[in-house]
Picture 1 (cartoon, rainbow, N blue to C red):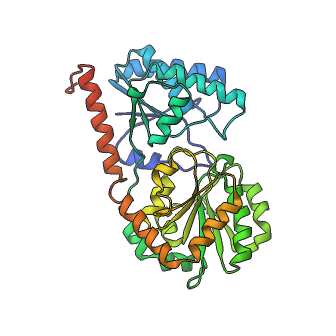
Picture 2: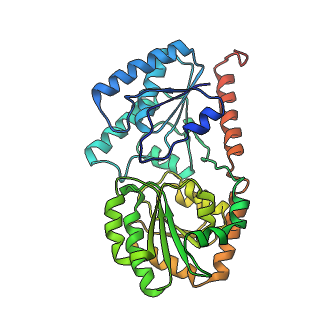
Length: 355
């Protein structure tokens, strides 16, 4: 098994240390970048074809739109028997201009014809792709993006210690967001909602963890809240941070599934999230959190205040979310389902599994 990837961006986290620690080689393609660049992309395509031929891979499993398009076309050119793709959401809303979005939709349609199975994270994701005429229904399988649930018991036990480290005293309400600071994540609506929450609950505090291109603009927007709104940067203790929150806010304008929703559930933390993409397949509205319209800071603030003013309901939602996430959304369960899919395709293609 090999992992072929572009070079990680400095403003995003990286799993490379985890991958190499597991003994999996990482083969870097330095020209494989997120944004389109015809010359670089053509060179990357040619290099991928050569890699696939030299590696004699039986299965190529691609991820995300740009890498998925180049990887699937290269796999077909190299004669790879089995091609699987995981979109990790979609690029239909909130990423590009209308012209660029339509180009990506065409690319997805074209590549789907060269794909044996498409793994969507949620049932809603399947319907979104089919609505754009991408692939056939029988190509799709739903396999969530699992999380490592093992650190969360310790994180829950250490909740008060983490809160003290964040400067949170006693039962002061703490509301947070975790994710890339990019427009599609909708954190501008979180900041706007925080201003309205603070007017109704002056003792509430807010944190936002992550890095990205929107960082400076969000800090300027949050400046009127002073030290009540803290930017934490990239965090490597997400389980502890999730457990320290009273409510996690997920204001995305487009979301394939939202792994932070699972992380919050594992930490017994309810969420207030946008009703977009695959989020309604993860959050049981009124049971594990509240769903609100996207791009609506008033609704976001109203949901948070509603939960903060009902501590017993808050605890019930957290416990219900925990029971849903652990163990049904674990890494182990995700890996088992993907392995079963690979075995299904090996049988379908009559490949020798002992190769």
